[in-house]
Image (cartoon, rainbow, N blue to C red; front, side, top):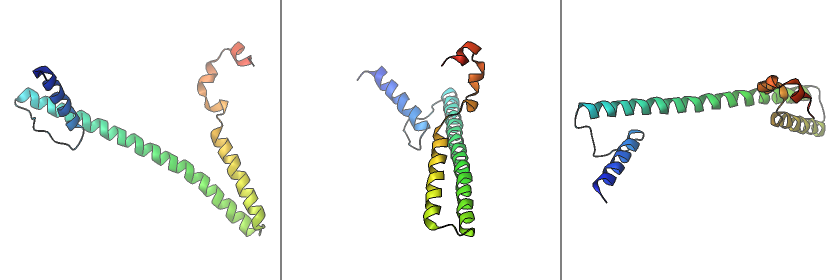
Length: 127
């Protein structure tokens, strides 16, 4: 392996260790290399934090959506129990509403696709 290939893979190895808890025996030897190390570490920290933040926000949003639906089904069960609805009918009602909720979740309505407002009239009237 020639010297340039070795240097390339050493640089790649160093850059990957900046994003992970791994270590490497290459370290900054002068001020400019130290500044570069600091900049790469700072960028890695910001990028990682951003990714974790986005994942956390997405998970919280999904939990909130699921929580609202779960509350509705909890209220439905309570409602049916208070009115002494037969267990068989309760199951049928619950299964039907679960099916409808899933179908509604899977369907994309035109009102949610805001970009459709920019279509010309002739295109809107196309079958």
